[in-house]
Image (tube, rainbow, N blue to C red):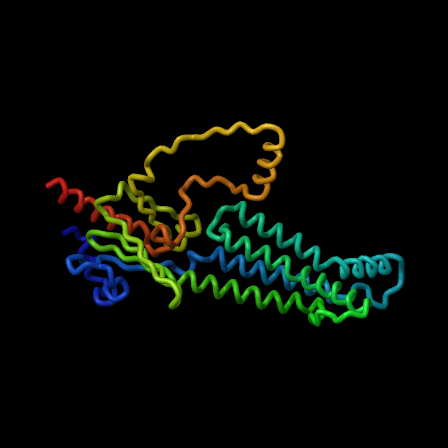
Length: 304
């Protein structure tokens, strides 16, 4: 047996591997086990910081009274601008969050998925919907009707919502990070996804059916020693026919609007998620070499 395979097999806790991956056959031997590293999820933690800072900046600007007690045209103008901002800050917040959501979507990174984009959009809409609900409440009271009894919007809610939204996103990120675990045996690659007690699934890639393996390591990943390993099946190598669509008139307008909303930068490497590959694992090149050796052994056995 190859030295890298034997070393990896000797270092793994086989009982723990079989306990976590119940579908491993009795005739299979666990060779390597791992999971995404903390640093592989750093774009999500950076986005969580951006969410909080955006709320905090709006809170600080909204509650700060500029040029209070100072005389002069300049300071008077500054106070007028401050009062105008107090009238539109909740709506300006929508624009800022839309920009953050759009930039995040365009970058086409691990946070550029539908769930995260939807979460950012909801975050942006909450203050304005709350404020508009208060306006409706005031109008109903002026008309002598029963109000909606919604708590009044105060600028300090920017800070409270910032803390709440950031905690929600961090919890979601931590749950996602600890939901994935990976196992390599001499026959298969197992990708397990377990979300608390709600969801449990295992994807199995047979080593003798894989066409190739591909490593993906970002610049930061190279420095910190983590990366992805993507199993390439024969279907992935099939050339997909290019479809050219001719658009005319109104179709062009609709297409341009769709591009403005959904366009992402093109990445040279294949897009991967933690459920499709060995995502954010330590020492990816060592694991890549190990998996390749196992694939070669499987192919040699088939040829014999």
